[in-house]
Image 1 (cartoon, rainbow over the protein chains, first blue to last red):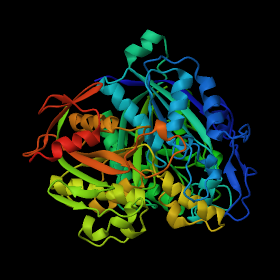
Image 2 (cartoon, chains in turn green, yellow):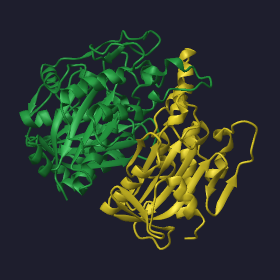
Image 3 (cartoon, rainbow over the protein chains, first blue to last red):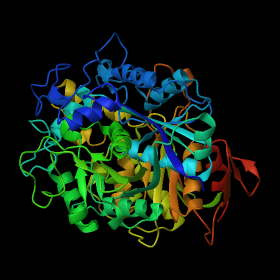
Image 4 (cartoon, chains in turn orange, purple):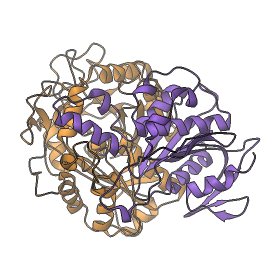
Length: 374
Length: 235
């Protein structure tokens, strides 16, 4: 079985056009969350989102195409045999404006596979690629599946491109579900009342060691474990006991050949909703030694980027391992009971060279990845 | 890498069910709407409130999964098996997206409609009803033949990640502005694959990039064609 390495990690978020600006912004406790001006938010629960300022509606094309172009510019040339996996939950849904529910022919550009095909053509890859869609765990699962392909020898290099934008479609939806906060999100705050949406993109290139050496690419971090599991509980809310997330984490630790006690740093999903954050606090207490664990959430700074969340957070973990620092968590005022010593608004040194990153989504899906390096 | 087919289930325009229990739909004028035809009592035995709230895309996917599990003899809440789910789709839940967007245009965004605007929702519902806590994800591909999903499923069995995998296809009946480029069969078809069962429809072997059906040594090029060939066999 082959080891899996990350050889490139690129992001675009509300805190800036690359990974360096994301890391620096988080370390400076900055927020990229601002009132949305792209559409009227007056009838929705709140006005805020993590917006990429350079994304502006143009002609008839979707913002997702602009975002994809910006991301691909950072990547440069890609080996043509690379297997492509994209991860987006709604891709070009902002172009749904022309469809008002009557029986009209719709454009195939609305399909998620259209984004995958666009990226495959721009990068001139031999394979058409696939999109993996599993709600807010999409990119974490895409990275896990990419890692499986490398491990089994089915592929030597896999490119995971993850992205979602802030559209009125999704904004109105989370608002009417009662899941959106009227203020910028406050992960793990005792008075938190919902998430803030965000937009973003990430590209994570995976290779086996031989391919990385052949192409002269640095091994920035190793993915040593991954796990995916379902709650089998509720469509839009997590299981209170976090059974699915616990199972995913245990699977990841099993694959990495470690015990949960060997984890001392967690990048959480931390959306700022009442139920998600409560579930994650339960999981942390059940699985880990709370005296020897530090955790963070970045969604108070850039919003919840849906299909891109796991990819952005994995890329950030690569940077955190390189710098041996855990970035601050911003947005909260008073921490929920039980998480006070685990979450901090200050940067902290990592205790070792390993980070667990997790994401959870609608349908009760949970995914966990363990990275080592730095 | 190989695995055995132990269950087949489908919900299509002309019929739904599994090989030993087929429910044929009576032809109607115009295009039949799958949602009106799929009744809870024809799919599952026990009451399940969310079934009535599901959109058409989720209902047909849920139905095909239910029939496939029945055919494989995997009961609701069977905790002795780790069951994963992989679904391929070209259309995704775009039909549901359009229906939700109309409620936004009418200034009354519907939470009940929005809750089903993710392609993976029907996998979540199947997981909840049948107690499936394994992996689940959707693969979006144009002109899907379902083979990428089947390849991932065989790999999961081979690696020991799961005891059984539900893999299949689910597509809406939607009209595209570019019809010539897309050949999509509306409806849903799912297989159950397992490692070494007592009875099966036969073994499938993945040798990248091909998947071979061992009984006739034929290459599988499309899940629908494959299902028609093996549904006539007895396990």
